[in-house]
Amino acid sequence: MIDLNNQCLLIGRKDEYDGKNRIYIEEISGKVNIKDISFNNFDDNKYIKIKDFLDILNNKMDMHINPESLPFEFEKKIPKTNIRSTLPFIFQTQDIIDSKIKLFYEDPKPNHFPVLAGWFGPEYYEILKQIEKLNVSIKNLTKRQEESLHQNKVLISNLKNSLRQHYKLNGIEFDENWTFEYCQKRIKNLEQYTKLEYSNELQKRQDELIEIIDKQNVELRKVQNQIKKIEKNHTQGDNHKLFIDKYTQRAKNYNFKEEYKCPICSKENEQLTISAINIYEANQWLKKELTNIPFHTDNFEKELNEYKKNELELIDLRKLNVEEFNANKVLLDKISNLKNLNEEKQKAQWKVLSDSDIYNTRHVEFNEVILDYQIAQLERLKEKKNTYNENDTYYEAKKIIQEKMSLNVSNLDFEHNPPDLFLDFHPKKDSEFKLYHINLDDETINLNRIGSASNALACHIGLFLSFLSYFAHQPKSKVPSILFLDQPSQVYFPSGKDNTDIDKVGQIYETILDEIQKIEDETGINPQVIIADHVKDLGDENVKLYEHYFKADFRNGIALVPNEF
Image 1 (cartoon, rainbow, N blue to C red):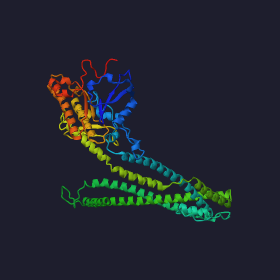
Image 2: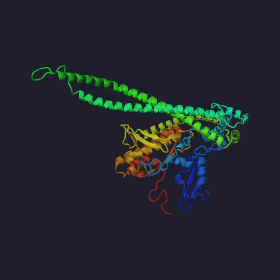
Image 3: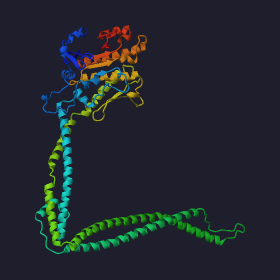
Image 4: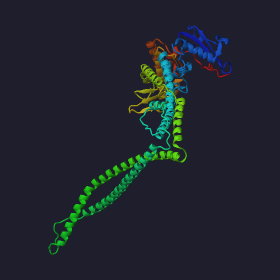
């Protein structure tokens, strides 16, 4: 039996070999006691297929959004949630409840969380859909824009080259600064070629180029010779510096005196005095040379860099002139050897007209206005989306869940005090929920390093009680206020003799009951927490304490799931 939106439903299923794919569902009176339900109450004609059962249950739980109630057709954008989407938050199996590896028996999708929590209305998802559509459209338009620019650039270049060549043959100036639109106007009034046997302008230009290139060759050789000279002098300067350094060290070993006397007769030795003076003067010269070396070295570097810069500039200028000379030479060779100038002019004119036609038929038109409009529209939608404060809402949800989780865990058997538990989840950053503890040394301890099994158990129970509370406090939440815990006492295995372990298990039930009462006091919703556990092992006193909450005892051969088929 399950209560959903003021409706009491009776749900059942036959064993695996008899009706494996069919489920029973019927609305009954909420006054019926589950202990009074027997197999005789299940009508064989009311078993339905699992898919149909899930559709009914989803509608009963208000998990679907009716497209007819929405102003836009955007339901495909809303993450598809159903009863299965809620199970990770309300279901803890025996092998998961104390696990250090997994938090959920089945990993939930973080992007389902806003839908399950009922954070936003339909208009939010319409905005998401429109943003997605605009992103796709803008991407396609931008690609088309790039393709059109590339294709048109080639066509424009070909047409301008043809016009330039036509003008060369006819001795007409072609200005490289002309816009393409201006070139098109000139093509419409294309000048007729003049019948000449040769092109004076073209030959005149060749003569000019020969003179320019010769001068550049001479200048380039001068610069290159000067570079070699400077590099040679620079090498000699380096050798000179080595020499100076070598003898400077030696000079330090001599102590100069103004006069030298014989140690025996005390008579002055003029020859030694003269030599000492020479050594002193040489030492002074060494110091002067050492002082000037950095200055000369800097001059060498500056002068060498300046000449190399001039060399590169001359090479680039000469290259441009040589390329133009070679192109003109090819044309002049054709004119002089094979064809007359009239034929070349005529072909050049035809080439201009042909390339103009090719451009008119092949160029790609692109409307920049549409792209600009869509980009502006996208920015407006993003600004509208930001007003929903999605990140702030996630932050607030995490804060509420974390505080509730730490509060519940502080009442359980958790060795770290204070608990300081944290939960990370965000659909755009992480693909999973991550629970961790920060100790007093500010060290982050993930679930797999949390310590004992009792620590992991406390984390699981604390987290899922906080989920239960959080969803119950959300007015538009799609998650039912149900929590199923399978054998939370398995960590302790109370035998009725170890009072310490029994007390710790008792803490679990006290914490769960306290949280249920808080939720009811704050929201008016009385959550249903279903626990499958060995409660009678808690001892007679505890059994009496929790006897009010017992729903069924499946011992003495009365199994929850039949073990015989």
